Length: 445
Image 1 (cartoon, rainbow, N blue to C red):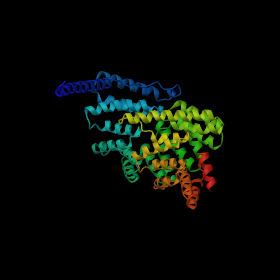
Image 2: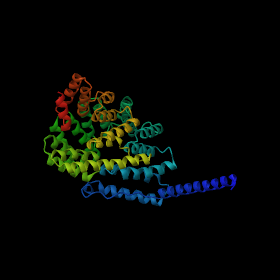
Image 3: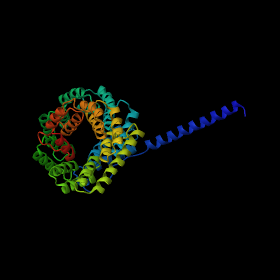
Image 4: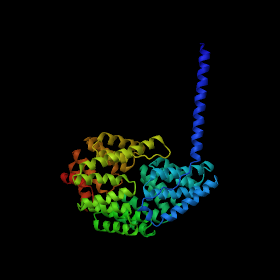
């Protein structure tokens, strides 16, 4: 057979293959466009929340409007907003972020400069830990409407996660000037917290709680953060009080349950802590609850349950991480969480691998640097841990867990005096930190 004939056959086959791929792509895109996402049923407990009836009614109204009018932009955005809030309530970010992004992208396909759609897209990117993309999208929206407080909040979040804390402070100031409310107060609180200003952080979070209706999910989230600030300040009584109030205002609120579980753990009341964490974990998807359960199961001698729970966390997070790799637009980046999950099962090599993956995305973030440092520490590579922990300390954070880890790393590098000073700062108010970490820190002292 002549070469020209062979080349002709190859070109025809190539053209057919390309045509098939294009046809398949168009078919999938059409099917995707014709897909309609709806609310998922809540668990029996969450279905008792006062807003559930309203949420169902709104979702039904907006979905009906979308189905009857393919160009209905407002209903798509309103439904996306419902889904974004439902993700917070249920913890099912995998489904609801995907569903919300579906409708947001449909709006942007019609109008790429729609401010609300860009705002929601930025929020969803941040929710899925696509922080660079979220910040870039928020900047696009801010250029369209520079007088919207909420978009500055997203720019605060994006800059914090990317480690540009100076920019975060600047945008927080702009947000406060435009609209001092629960969103702005809570962000001011967090910025003060990561700069070691715990009294100021507590003051701002109090204002966040007081500026929003009691029982609302956003309010009780802020109240729980306030409780956590008291925990890290060593005021366990105030922390317990706020978690209890949160449960009174919003019965079975899982994050308040987790707060009381930490209080019970500090009192060595492990059976109560286990019950609270198990109940919270059954209500929402939050990997940290199960990670805490691993240590509690070990504390009561149930090593089999501890191992099974730890492996379950690793497997679930691994699936999320794979989705993040497969779908750059919405899949959740879970590498930092995976690093800590692998440390729980003593797989230090995998922990470091995922810590470095996250570091490559945002090398200036103090939490990410702490994660890398702690992974190296657990591998026994103390010299490599040192520069990362130094970066993690650059905002003067007084987070007691961070300080304990920093003190241990400095001590292992021969700077015992500095290590003791840092650990003394961490433990001076007797904050609520993990027992195993406290033991290691006290051994250095």
